[in-house]
Image (cartoon, rainbow over all chains, first blue to last red; front, side):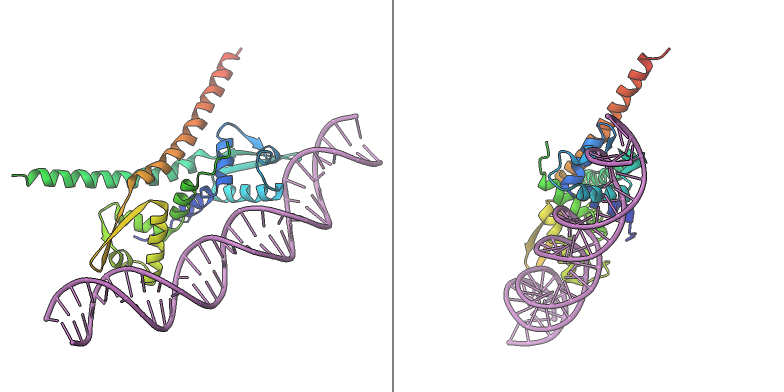
Length: 109
Length: 109
DNA sequence: CCAATAGTCAAGTGGACGCTTAAGTATCGA
DNA sequence: TCGATACTTAAGCGTCCACTTGACTATTGG
């Protein structure tokens, strides 16, 4: 094992920042422009642009520029990949517990 | 909105590192000591201990020392919290798509 | 008792991160 | 055409992060 899943690195890294999670939470409700995303956030526009770049780098967000407006939207497939990793770990843990329970039941008096 | 969920920050931050994900992947299969965790990892024991501290700080892992051996195990509830955040975002996105579909269907010729 | 084992602690280093300000470019509306 | 809008780019700054080395403590088996 020990395979470096760099994609997963980037997704979790992207989601570890509250500002970026807030941007995702906004975008699941529908697409938005950069300034719309920046409006409720307590920082400069440039900072928000940088956050969006991180989100795009992770694949969580995709954007497209028309005229002078860049419109951003979520890419749910990547969201799902992270969800699956987590679900997988939980499942493995649960099946282990089950086997442990079975073993204890078998060896009961 | 805009509530800083510092717990979620720490969980995603913890999971953004491949070494720490490898440790979690090992621990869902059952508890392990620090040196057992360190054995397959290409770094010093001290580095592994630091990773374990990060995982403990996020609540993903819990450990207990007996004699000179520290035994680590996963805490699946925290794993689940992260999973739920992701599932929630995906669900919101899906219901939005549904509503959009309904709207388009209603306004058909 | 004492050597090996298992982990702990602290300081240091290079690089990534989050943010700022400042200056620039492209587009649109009147 | 000209000013406002909507970003974009770059440099800089303080902080956090992953990792190392080296020294240290506590336990345990023989």
